[in-house]
Image 1: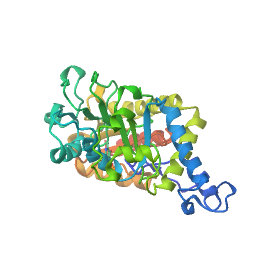
Image 2 (image 1 turned 135 degrees about the vertical axis):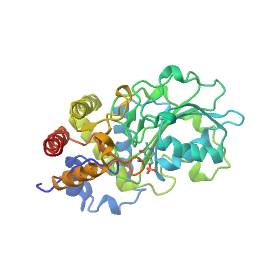
Image 3 (image 1 turned 90 degrees about the horizontal axis):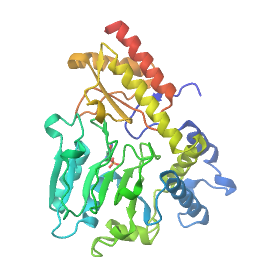
Image 4 (image 1 turned 60 degrees about the horizontal axis):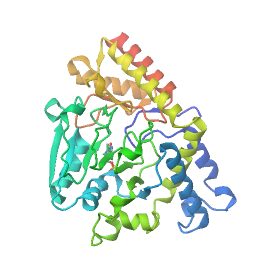
Length: 363
Ligand code: PMP
């Protein structure tokens, strides 16, 4: 394995090497069945076992209570921007939204078409460089649910402590930090996440939903758009993204083999600390995000003076040095290193070393 790069992409993102190797080894003949998972009926016993294993792994790592269903869906996290209000909005009870960036913005665009809503907190006026403080958030008792994103992939912010929404269900888009740390699932009514960052390949979306909330959805919704359908059919109403589910199962095994989520979380803390320390102590780079709001998954940084030319040079030279996808999101520019679970400490160390070397030449 000599030509593997360190991949800092925001998603699809790096996967653990051992997962890729295992998928390669099992590609032509899965567990002695004489066929690939890619060719396997989703109604077969073997595939049912694959699905059960992926779900059991996720349930174990996140300690998901029994009154929550885990769904394996398609349509990306973006479809959930619509499915959530379609299923959880209750007539006459507006949705409360905490607006913290481009992805909550996309969710608001869908709410605009589907349900009345109120933005109860927003940091848009501060260019989303921080998260609202808990005392800035007032939840309405009559809200259908409160909507938020736990980690803002583009602006590089992440909630440490979640708002207390009392009896009002909290719905979180956890696409870019699910399974990066322990969370208390019971604090949420519904969690969703595209798989392509911490869970596995693109094409799979995970929904974790409290079962009583599933009954809110109208039975007149198209079958595919009702959570009820997927709960009832255990994510096998139609053909699910079988291979992506299989890879997610391997990622769940990898987390267990690494020592569990607590070990992953400690490693994520150490990686983020290493990178933010390097940025904060640099004379060339800086981080525009407020300290208390900084994400441990997506580290946003810039060259001082927002020197776009030097940032482009950094991205180019880093790529030539085997450190790829360090460009910030096209909507905000700058630089971004996504350091999800599968990014090894060695990758972050290589980035820090490269930043220091770059600074010695251009700083
Ligand atoms: N929410 C967040 C926080 C994201 O980072 C992304 C994608 N980067 C999405 C939603 C959209 O996900 P998808 O492309 O799976 O629809």
